[in-house]
Image (cartoon, rainbow, N blue to C red; front, side):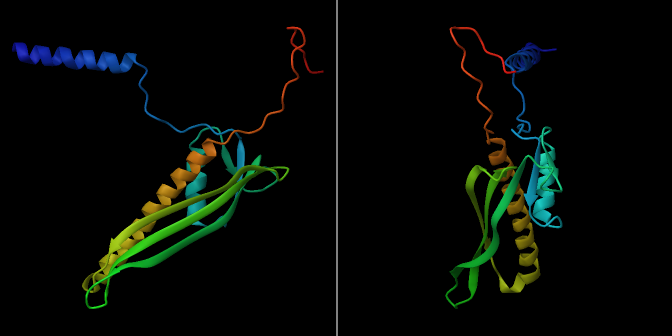
Amino acid sequence: MTVQNRLLQLFICLLLVTVAGCGFQLRGPKPMAFKTIYIEMSPYSELAADLKRQIKTSGTTNAVDSREEAEVRMVVVQDNREKAILSLGSDGTVREYQLRQRFQFRLHDKAGKEVMSLQEINITRDITFNDSLVLAKEQEELLLYRDMQSDLVQQIVRRLAAVRMNTPATPPAVSGIPTTAP
């Protein structure tokens, strides 16, 4: 082996040892502050199915099928998709559309108390349009909506993972002696 090859191997080994020793770890699913959640959406909705699947991967939380079983419930206020004209050509035909998805939700506990105030997520994608490629553009639009939904699910799960549930306060210690609850 040449000196250059040995130096390269040594450099790679040192790099691997450094990365392994610094505690580097890929970002995994964040645990949520609650064990069960009920999602107030149609159980046949593709978005609800994706959301339940993603929540389950957190490892600590399950999406349940009834309100009574749930520690918290996600109340969906709005879930709209729209398609707006973004630009027109010189002959008045559409050249670009903007696809929009707007989603709003709140989180309530069993008692109906609001755990998370109204959250709004807006996602947009631009798509060019050509009259001669209508079928291809329809497929592209479907793919973009799927991508938007995936992005939406990720954003919802991140917001749910950021929730901190209120825990009952422990009584303060008196003169340095901790008190215990009966």
